[in-house]
Image (cartoon, rainbow, N blue to C red; front, side, top):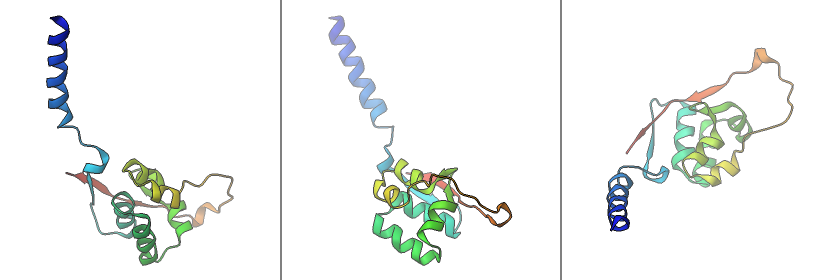
Length: 118
């Protein structure tokens, strides 16, 4: 008897909370502005690998520049894409690792502003 009550409660909770929790594929990423970095972040999260290649070309930046300099909500653009299920974009723009010597006076990082809607 206790087992069937627990099973019934678990089923009710699963239906109740299962319908309110959205998966990453259910979310639509929307930019807060129309800047180039924001457009790239939105494309990375919502788009395909081909769409990302087109967006990078339209931005006027190189793939390497985007990979090394664009962040989306504090994450690399590749990590951000993977978080929203775009593994192809993550493979296209993996986080760069290794030692780099950079003149800090010349580095300018860009960041996109993103909000989620359902």
